[in-house]
Length: 179
Image 1 (tube, rainbow, N blue to C red):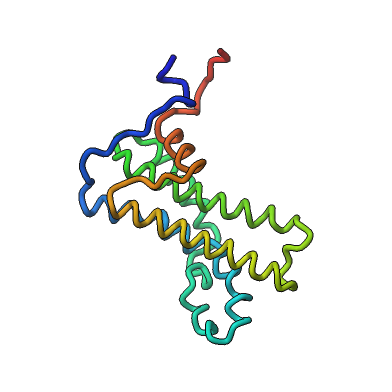
Image 2: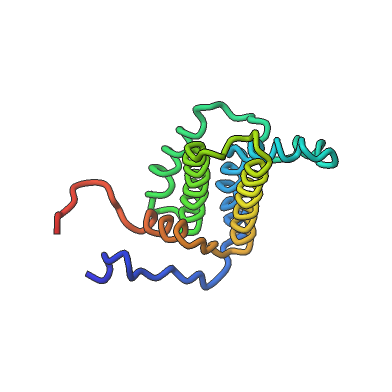
C-alpha cells in the first residue's frame, strides 16, 4: 500500500556520479526542448526593439527552426514508449528525458493559454516585455536542468520533477483496479 501511494514517494538517492557519457547524454532532451520551443519567437520583438541586441536574435535557440514539424510527435512517442518506460535503461536518463518533454509541454501550454488573455498580443510594450520574460525564464530553467544533468544530479522543479519521477516509476497503462 505504501509503495503504490504516490503522495509519499521518495526520490532515489544518487550515491555516485553517473559516467561522463551518461551525464552528457542526459543533456540532449533539454537541448531538444530548447531548439523546438518558440523562445526565439517570444524574444524577437524585444530584441528588435533595442538596437544593441539586434544581431543577437540569430543566436537565440529556437529562433530558426531546423527540424521538421513532425519531429516532436515522433520524439515524444518513441522517447516515452521506448526510453521512459524501459526499465532496463538507467533511471537517470529516463528522468531527464521525461523532464525535458514535460518542460517543453509546459512551455507550449503557457504559450497557448496566453493567447486567450486579452493583453497578450505583441502590439503593446507591456506584453512584449512579458513574453520576453517568459522566454528568458524558460531558457534559464533549461540551463539549470543542463547544469544539474552535467553535475550528475536531478533538477528539482516543484511540479515537473514529481511528474517525471512518477512517469518513470509506475506503469499507468493496462487494466486498472478501481480500488
